[in-house]
Image (tube, rainbow over all chains, first blue to last red):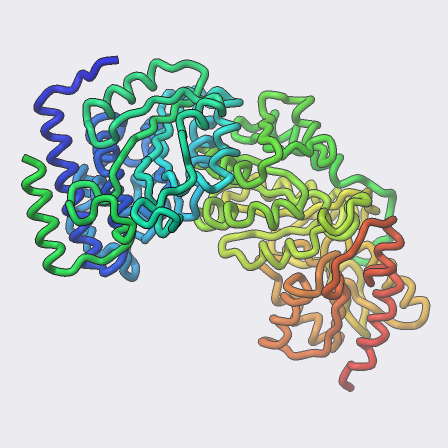
Length: 284
Length: 319
């Protein structure tokens, strides 16, 4: 499967992803709360979904025919909010309300507060099941929209993920695309290897295939590979698709990359400035 | 409604299956969601009568409830049914985060609720479900006394847009509402008038409460029976009126004494109209597998226990 992305489109996606990463760090710095590592490993994929892959309209966020996205790893909400703001679902300034009283931007996505959020998540393992329900709902009603769902590798320790995997396969949900944000770190993890703190998820490809899913493995920061994977997914029949996106937690900022402590650390003023500088340089 | 003599026994689960089949044939939105218990819960009536509207989720209650939530976001009305023990405990986080908080239109049917679960014992008895569901914001909690009332509740739930939990019984119960009865959401109903004391009961304990009241009447004690089919939102006026008119209350439910109807009534009394009361319910113990009558007797839910509790409560009545 080839990528049909033009050079201009690739440039646009890279720029938007870089802007989103800056917004993530600025927002967490401003709110003095939130997550950084996970949202930044997910940014390129979420940017592709909202700026290229999905059939959506920020001016009609509840259109019944729209494609759906469920952020099952709900603690990466700020990553989704940053992309939604850049895409026009809300003013970018609204990100400053994140995590504060009466804000539409809750710590974990709340579908009742912000149009554009297709499911409430936050308790891990649940979003993928809801995405199965949404995709099944499309099949039952003869709707053509597609459902995308991002899960985490830490999240995959929840047994419910595999309950969902079973049922998606049983109902042959080829309108469902899962994306594993495989950044290989979680909040604290296992201390037997102090540096990597690796989770016990080994070979997710084998696991998802054994549950009857079509698996595509990519570099989750490469827009052409992301696009090719979504194109391939559209051709798969009678099976749900899992895209295993190899990613880097904290991607884009040297001192945040692959550091489990940046799961939810608040940057200092100088860390914020340094991060923004690096992101601006990296985007060129 | 005045005093009603219990009539023939009718199975709630049979009527549940028939009614849901009817809904599924009439409404494109209605789907039955099973957790591999359809031939126990009678959800198989839909599987057999309208197989396209029956979705099997297997033995995985957490996924089952989250899938139901996802289906509801697409405009469907899923009716998820499994044993109340599993629904209320195994999948409660999914229900809270993905159904109750987003106010999604999912109907949750707790089959085999209470103590009498067909000789399956403490792992399958649901004596905490009212307490658990009552504590969730946005949740409606219903407990029908008989199959006729249950059918009317289902008609209400079908029209109501939002999460509803309904606990139903495994075994047949006497029909105690008469032909004119109409379930009213959020309203209690007086099944028997009386002036000395009021029994406020819910679900399957209402028929036992009525039988106890008849027995007490023969002994010269005038007992009112107020049936509380909606546990949330609670009919607080009915509770206050009962406290004012008879001055003492006994609650009766096939549930733990903690957190259920008894607790809900006590909360209202203490805040609005303090009056002595006693609770009939399972008293902080795990039960066991045994025959129904033996369980009711040992765990304090029989007619005899209600009679005894009423007499004790009367001693607390202020003159």
